[in-house]
Image 1 (cartoon, rainbow, N blue to C red):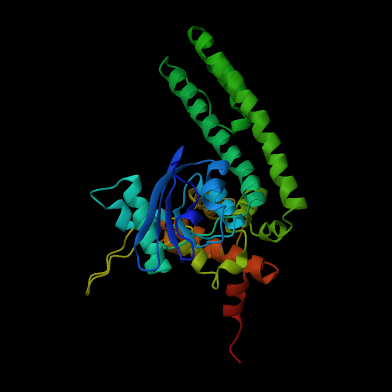
Image 2 (image 1 turned 180 degrees about the horizontal axis):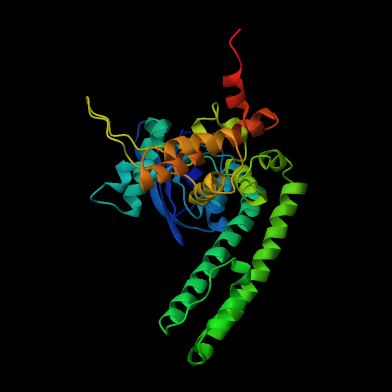
Amino acid sequence: MKKSTRIAEKIEGETIATGLDLGDKVSYFCVLGPHGKILREDRVGTTPGALRKVFGVGDNKGLIALEAGTHSPWVSRLLEELGHEVAVANPARLRLIFDSPFKNDRADARSLARLARMDRELLHEIEHRSEEAQADLAVVRSRDTLVRTRTSLINHIRGAVKSFGARVGKGPTEGFILKAAEAIPPALRGALDPVLQTISGLNVTIKRLDGEISRLGRTKYPETRRLQEVHGVGPLISLAFVLTLEDPARFAKSRAVGAFLGLVPRRDQSGSSDPQKRITKRGDSLMRRLLVQSAQRILGPFGEDSDLRRFGLRIASHGGKNGKKRAITAVARKLAVLLHRLWRSGDAYMPLFASERAAQPAT
């Protein structure tokens, strides 16, 4: 007799907890009954059709736990559409799975199912953004990829030219092609002219994406305008911030945003020992990088006077190069908190609000 692919036919009438370990082509799942008994273990193709066949039939709708990854956004939306409750686990926090000496897909599915059944808090759940927000954020990520590719190509040309005893002058990226064309030795023309043409094409595409990012902010995400009142925050950073967080109500306190984006120091406190650690770097790496870039502008020579700038300069004054690095990270963290507060409250930005309040005489 042909083996059934329908979960409901295996476990009619029982409350279930399922662990689903997503793979690129094939995923493994483990179904547990109310007393922790394994009711079924199997694999399923990581396609909408295959998942619908397994999880879309019958009245037995339970909790399905899966790890965040490439496929988890669309899979979680599909399973919720089929009537299941879905818990998307943070893989960075699942040491039970990652530290296992017997790690495999089947064992991972079992672990996810048991964690979901025992205590969902052990999964350290994350919330995926909507499909629309994911698509809009893809514009920001595509631009970032193209910019990093352009930087790599520019560095390649600089290095090649330097190896022939010449140099490409410094200046804005937009003017690099003209300067490079003048500096490239004749012997390198055949090798580097195609790279220059690629950079020229990237410039056009990046400019077009910049226009699309500005359009998205104006038409779909008007809240970005208020965030751009902060010096150093433009259409790109404000849109990335809104799309990364998506809902400001997710955070009861604005201070939590710094931790969410991995901008708070690690802690390894034990007894009287509490050493200073580097930041956790958890969360969205692109958003963290953009906030750091904004912090560098705020603290740079053309930064406008503000509470943020004064705060960073005080930290930078306490320790040379390391002090400057700490200041940039601290300003990036404080900037994330400020942007969330402005977004959630709707208040106008006052650059020197804290300084002016501190200067008022006591009554």
